Length: 346
Ligand code: NCD
Ligand code: ZN
Image 1 (cartoon, rainbow, N blue to C red):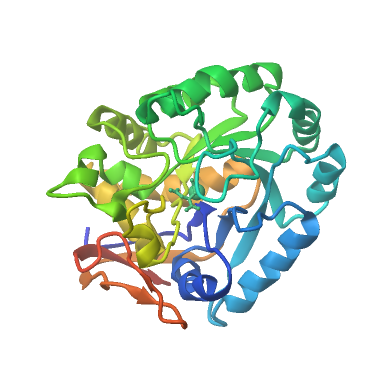
Image 2: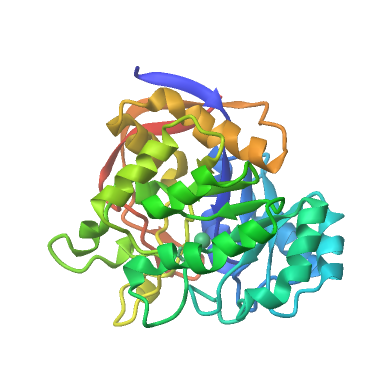
């Protein structure tokens, strides 16, 4: 198979930042994806409907005219989010969820939730109105080993929420362990999960291959090979529960290559192609369409896209960097390396 077409895909978990970074990255996504769920962890975070709609306009203004791209907004859940906020958000079709960041779990999460148990009224309202709770599933207790934080979160936080509110639609974002996969598979149909291309392609050895490699550092951090395999099996299974979410998370080169570098891999430049690489390794390219273009809309109750995209076998080299207008550099995953698949709109 040297070329095949699929229903145009969507990215169910994406960071596009704002200002200079936004205009540098957004068209990489718009080239391939029709819709993307935009993460709200700006500084300050996107916590209100007014700000989300304004941010959506900023994104649309940065999208090249040739693309038809729809940002789907997520609001940042805080200790101060109210039921009225949920009701207001639910009235806007372009706002589709609230993102739960346990306070301190990742980039710009200081304003995140400190005690989820005090937000049960808000979560009940979300369940009632069909608003999706998107979760960064890691505990932040520094005494918990960083490689165990997802499993502990599932046991201590996620499982109790799901038991109490089985009707609440939950997406466990960027699953990195077999525990995450098992949780989603054993939960009600209201629970799904996104998988990133980098977690499908790499295990934690990649972080230390011949030296410390900051561009492979993201949160949740890459895990052992056995976990990577569980993620790949889920992605190619044809299940409606697992769908594409790149978690492309641009940072400037100096913020990544630093004594205390930021978490986040920039992958939007090859958003679909990196998944094609992972699926091809498993001889499962025929399963890519379900994962990238069908399972996500099904979960969110949205129509699948009407247009198609073609993936061609065509060697190309990933650029060494992308420069912002102000001269900052973003280093993409697989910088200077060659790719086999290329997406073109058809
Ligand atoms: C994300 C970011 O940089 O915003 N970083 C990351 O490593 N994935 C935040 C997140 O999704 O955790
Ligand atoms: Zn993310």
